[in-house]
Length: 166
Image (tube, rainbow, N blue to C red; front, side, top):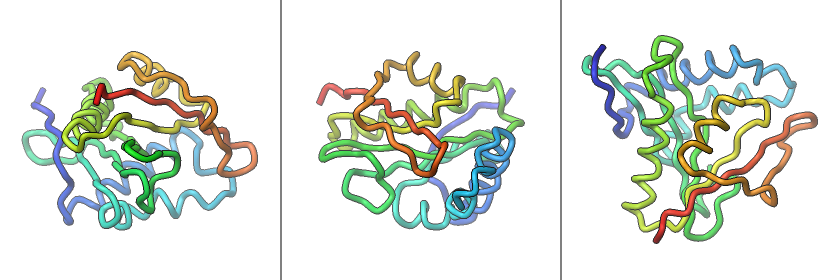
């Protein structure tokens, strides 16, 4: 099994990150709510331009997954407050299942928060995503129920945060 590393995405990898995210969101039934969210997931170019798009790659530079990192006050931050770093759209390819890609990407976000001097990392996840919720809790994230919200009728996003010790 090849080594997996996390780094900033290159322009030629943006389309691959969109395809991976679309495949994951479709497989989990997260694009069938009529909210138009598929267009947002497909728009990795905006994530690349307006935030930090991190990728997990193997030793052949094949993209295995990605995550969008947005600082508070930037266009792609949904729940981040002053001094916080938010991440969104964490996804990994089916080929990368079981390789710890989601955890590596999450840890890279935490490290990025340390580098930027942010006090907390925050995220929202759909309440049905038990696998992701287990991962975030394992890494020390705690619920922030006051930041839960519904982007569309019947779609409940629950918030989590991890203090960085800054």
